[in-house]
Image 1: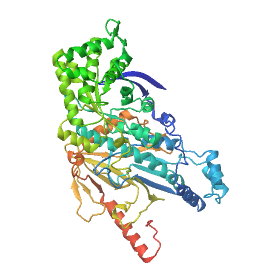
Image 2 (image 1 turned 90 degrees about the vertical axis):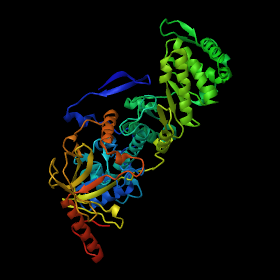
Image 3 (image 1 turned 135 degrees about the vertical axis):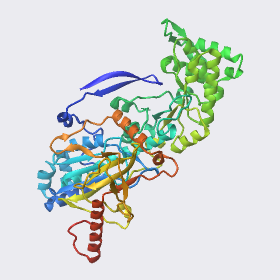
Image 4 (image 1 turned 60 degrees about the vertical axis):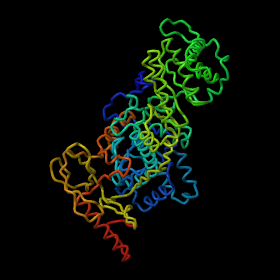
Length: 592
């Protein structure tokens, strides 16, 4: 059951529908997990080789072997040194509802690739398989994550854990990437701690990318997870309905172009907010045009079609009047026409919101807008003109945001589309899903590329904090290893380097992964919401050292292993290398 509440969003007068989840006891959490948002997320949304491996395991009676897989990434995106983890919500939905349908099984049985498989594989195995014997551990949605530290640990029968791989990667890769992209843009626009101010306002961020996204699912996912990264609103109406997040929007150039003269808006009226009387808005606007034009003739030469469009929009949305002002000439026409209508609406009791810029020199134009607004504020004794928003939306990306800061600007809200939702700076995160343990024995993958060498065995991961309560390093340990403790010296080893260990005494220790899906209880956490993940992500980013999030040459964050885990890694590494060299079987590891 959901409660429906109407709330207001500060600075934007947006009314949204908020779906508030009631608190539930843990035993009911599993039953409250909704199905995946996209109905394409089924067991068939996978790579064929997952099914061929599953058959191979089943055929050789290995499908019930107890396995441990880790999902992680090897390198932070966007040439940065941190990543925001997202996607556990949809991953839980997938795990909860994992089940092959009869039509799925019929298709697989009759496919050329699997047509030679025994009937019992389909009738007995795939027909009955689910995640009731699987355990999933994960970071909290919105966590700051670093390379090699598991985002998810999946344990259970080898067959089903293998079948989960492709879909889980799909559900984590892009959400984490776009959330990180959003976070980097927010940091660029207003600082790591939200300290950046423009005209005494903290800049807001809105997602405008649906039309440029990679299909409906890419658009929805981007709208959703950019909110976790710190965005304040989206133009995607469906996302607003489904997630209860603020939606924003004004009008496009087409609305302005559709009006040609003031004759089209003659007699348009707006209800006076105080008296309730109908006021001829067009007549009132033209009075202000004559009044201002007597001092500044430019007001008399603004585009009539544009002014008509603004009057029509003002009549339609007097409570939230915000106009796109660059259809013809931003300063000579657009901003002046906005001022005329805003003054008239003020006489009727309505406070306008501001203007949007979609082309030109955004830094210079935004500052000029504020100069004009402040002039009107003083002339007419209307302080709200000095507080109007200037929204900018023109191919903005992280680099542009830094350049705007360097130049100085007056933009109080950024509308970012293509560069946000498509992650043009880097199209993929590169998460991988690797087998690290089988039947209690660690497994290793070797490679000539050291970055691809797998750290073997089931692990626990901890974050160690310094005296300022900032993360100092992450430490991975073998599952039965000694746990790092507050106030005790901890030896932290680079997994591959032969250097001496770092000795660190943590002031606080936090275990990073917790069980989110238990093979007996099902879901063990409250289903993640966008609002909670956003708040958590912001707190995580604020705790990072500024050196990690800085724009130029950010400082790499240390990810270390315990002495026991490092010895195990190198023992298996050497055994695997010798085995491969001598062409002998290796009973302790898998090497490639």
